[in-house]
Image (cartoon, rainbow, N blue to C red; front, side, top):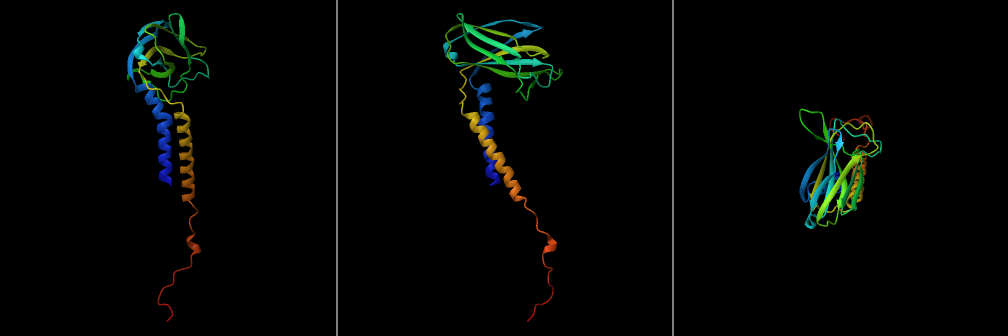
Length: 202
């Protein structure tokens, strides 16, 4: 039973964590990466998209001199995407759920934190203006901000995370209970009758 619960835990981890992360970061192809903040200045970005690029996943890489982002549930960055005067995406980014940021350079203490701004499901051919700006979070040591676009990305099934987390909970609880039941109280060796030596009665 213990092995079965371990398999359930691993399956839940794959469905709830690895699958959404891999779909968001590796499915489709990368359209490009652009620097939208550097030396204290934000600048809007205009990108030409085609209808065959859809759906387009929008991600933001924040380079900061920090081990983790503590935003106290405040907004670190805001992002909007518009085409032909119509806003097609508006998002707030917090970055506080990023547990394993990438190292910007072996020579620098800066870390790169990635957050997902959202998905542009339908793309009309033309120019899209992406505007990234500061949020209301304070004391975030930002060094640079990059906008990352991926086209033709897979759609993440909305049921994946709840199902995965449920399996993880079942697997973990079952595994802990199996350890508890297997570790019963050992028998007291003094409670056993002493061994009898020699020949028994004939």
